[in-house]
Image (cartoon, rainbow, N blue to C red; front, side, top):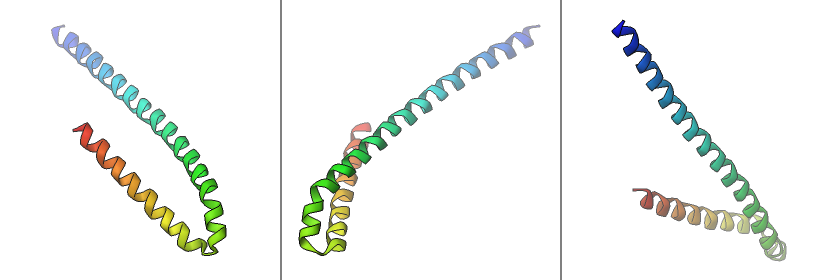
Length: 87
């Protein structure tokens, strides 16, 4: 009988761990979804701000490339800083 009780306890323990793991993953997914929505809004803002510059310059591809490089550099710096703080 002791063996059955140990097994039940282990099952309960593992179920609790699984429940916590699932909660963490759901929280991560929700935060990521809000981050994605925020990124889309920033994208709209950047496009609205840069549209006159792009149309005025006439060289759309050059400006789009320049903006993409600039945004990528900022994203990498932010990711680096957050990664550094997480350690």
